[in-house]
Image (cartoon, rainbow over all chains, first blue to last red):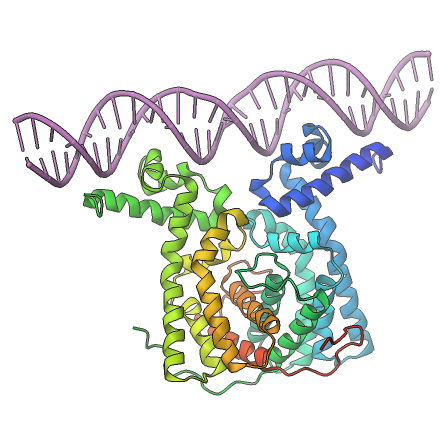
Length: 215
Length: 215
DNA sequence: CTAATTTTAAAACGAACGTTTGATTATATC
DNA sequence: GATATAATCAAACGTTCGTTTTAAAATTAG
């Protein structure tokens, strides 16, 4: 009997995941101790290794449990979009990408996503590859349907802008800009407007001749 | 003789700052040990406490040494702009904000800025308040000259987008989107185009009815 | 019930951490 | 040259960490 285990064991496993999620978000990977996680979960210290093998295994389990459903949602939304319209609308693509994160995620998941960007790469790269590799590939392909003439590099740069704006928005760290009173929905709508306009911008005038004069 | 100290002492202090900057960026605050920092600097472990009092004091010193000059540059550029033109151009304001970071900073400084967003707030908040408080205030005021009718909340949200896009761009963490082959200058130019267009966007069509438009 | 397996528990391991101490060496001042 | 101050150093402090071990309790299966 390896598949499920008894109910008490499963709830212990879940309690570890829950408290690890909260503490990893607050303190980061190195800042979180298994002792703090397990004692907050009300289980023995050794239980963490029993269920997840190592601290890193627990981290990966926490992360995948949070992010997998969101990215499945994003991919499903993109599929639906492309099936209905082979020449899709830019706003619809960006909405499919942003809405599952901005609107349909609880705060813990958002915080975990933001926290992820700060962990050491050797820890996060395997997880990111698994959770974001296909996502980025398919969305890039989708955007290329909208901008068939745009160089892939330029498209990647703009997608990076959108992701950065999204992460900064869901991040609770504020750089002393207070946006707490703006609702989720309004932030998402504004980010969509901002991103669509940013994507559609044709080369602006005023390419600087004065970039070099700094003294 | 407290002001300067002998040449060897000053170079020890500087060597600690240099190696701390590099290691803090790579490993974060909790992930960096004073032993690794001091041994990389070729000084005794106790020298870190001798010069900076504590690990946190060292962190603050590293951060301020990096960020103070950049933000002074940004404020000076804004001042020059507003003195020359009481009704400044949006692109000029954003350029004054972005260029010192995107073009005139070395990679270590950029990485440190990005890393900063991930450290625990109790560690970073005092530093952020000191280094970014005035910056945000004055740039917000500058942007309000361009958009006198825009609500401050909306302006803050858009500024958050710009900062997020900037941080994501200078972050070496890629989410598997490769933009390494794009030059600094081109990224900066694209970010300016993107941000100006995003700021200028007037309410796009297709605002969903689920969002209530209050006043 | 008995036996096999899964889950929990307590204790200890060696290693690494920030910090402090006390002594020693270098530098500057008179 | 004597002396006060600044700087360096090795060593140790007490804690905390991830992980392992060993055994007891709980659960399941025959």
